[in-house]
Length: 246
Ligand code: ADP
Ligand code: MG
Ligand code: MG
Image 1 (spheres, helix red, strand yellow):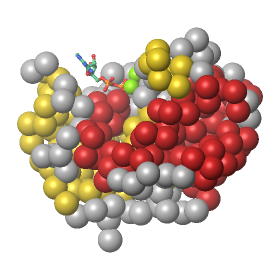
Image 2: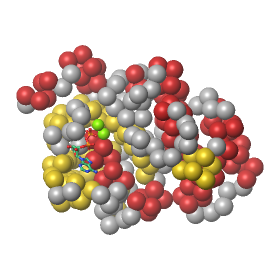
Image 3: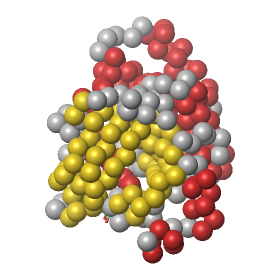
């Protein structure tokens, strides 16, 4: 059975057509990589699946766990188990990282979580990401470095345990050590095989320690090629040139 079914999806932003007839199917627990040149529409696809109101679906449909997704708000989609890690995470003064995550976890489950249980789980996840527990007290992303913001995103991923996580260039702009830590966190998420991943990336470093099931190449709003993990290596070596000509 499929977790996510994107069928013939077309999307416009501010009346400008960006995605043209996208088909994509993801099974539970699978990892898919989405690559493509700048401006191809990768983020647009991520935001559209998450339900950002800026993105207007002009054709096609999206099914999630067999249900029509397009009528649902972004909030409902998050509760259903979709998670999007932002390319540029927002700073939220006045809300601590710990309270933000606790609130999100309770929203998602619809019930209160025991303070002690939450605290222990959060500390375990922070340890995986080599984050000092004191980060929990800090205002969400305020004054965080690029790497710390990305770690905070992965911390949310580990705590929320979505059934589909979309990571939009979570690795971009990070130094080698930060990429390794972020990738360790993603590996931890992958470990229990329950959550699927759609990883949007320009680099292959984050993929080195991850298991990849499928790779897709997006060019000019269309998926022009799909393959297995070896497609990542090919793009790494030869770039997108052969896909641009096609
Ligand atoms: P990618 O993530 O592959 O680099 P994007 O999805 O960000 O590509 O962008 C695809 C195209 O859509 C680009 O031409 C970009 O300028 C346009 N676009 C994306 N988001 C917006 C937006 N919020 N407002 C206007 N144009 C946008
Ligand atoms: Mg981009
Ligand atoms: Mg993008």
